Image 1 (cartoon, rainbow, N blue to C red):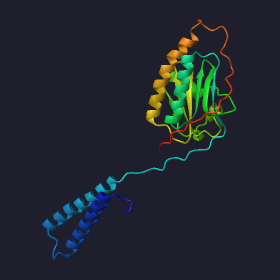
Image 2 (image 1 turned 45 degrees about the vertical axis):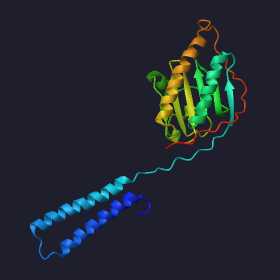
Image 3 (image 1 turned 180 degrees about the horizontal axis):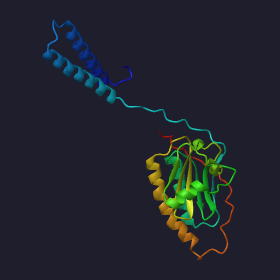
Image 4 (image 1 turned 90 degrees about the vertical axis):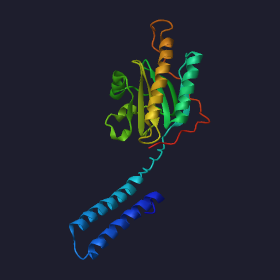
Length: 240
């Protein structure tokens, strides 16, 4: 009872006391008349009801999953040739994702090329696979709450080793925003909604940049700017 709030303890004590008095009354009665039996049943129901209210008064407080140590160095990689306004938008949005959500790493993949990587970086490039394609085809985000449980987790070797959770948001039919989380089940519905809105916003800018000179005759460059060390980024704590 020490873990219960004071109102719940009072309610539980009243229910137990009422049930005990009802039993004593039944045991000490000279005879069990129908009226006494009916009153005993009603009193018992009321006592049990009080105890149930006390139990419902409490709520489960699940322990937040612990943050996982991810191997890799923190930095920012941005592809060459982006317009200044688009580069500023991607930098601002990715920084906000790292500070306001439980994301440990952010990756933007557009038209077959990773145009931005930020946060904890992996030495291997990320390539979209079956899970990413399913997200693109449905046009909806896919949240992998515990990557260790999914047989297709090899698709995400381009994220830091040991990444426990992944959130994939398609950018139209040409790209994705991929978030790697610090802990299992760390991304909330609010995080998914915010990411969906931001992906829709940058989609317009990315499509405009890609179509500035019509259809590109040559593919986008495969190299990113060298990683720059990040400063002042304090990731949000994991949520249950």
